[in-house]
Image (cartoon, rainbow, N blue to C red):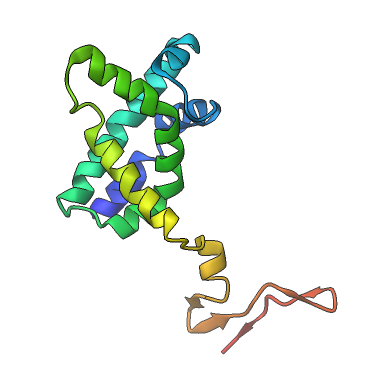
Length: 154
């Protein structure tokens, strides 16, 4: 149930727009550089930060499994952190508190470890996997002699 709610939180139009704004920026920005892009980008950084912060602590507390979060949004978390890290560090320094985005950073660090381990993306790892559909095993959609092979067999 928690995984379903997690997926929903990343499907809101507001979150999607915020993520799109952040991912349009180059990675490695300072807080000042993020601020130069304007209020909309700062709002986007805050919305994404608050959302991923919640996910990070849920993973740590065992409410949601890390593997599920890695599969659902690993790339998004890494991409977003690469764009807000400088800003988050400056917010921490400005307010004298290291707690800001602590779980976002923790989650991104764990995901970097997975990425460094060299795990292939799902479309490569599971390219031969086919679901069952009403008792049928679906065949590959690969082409044979120019004809798509997407018929089902029992």
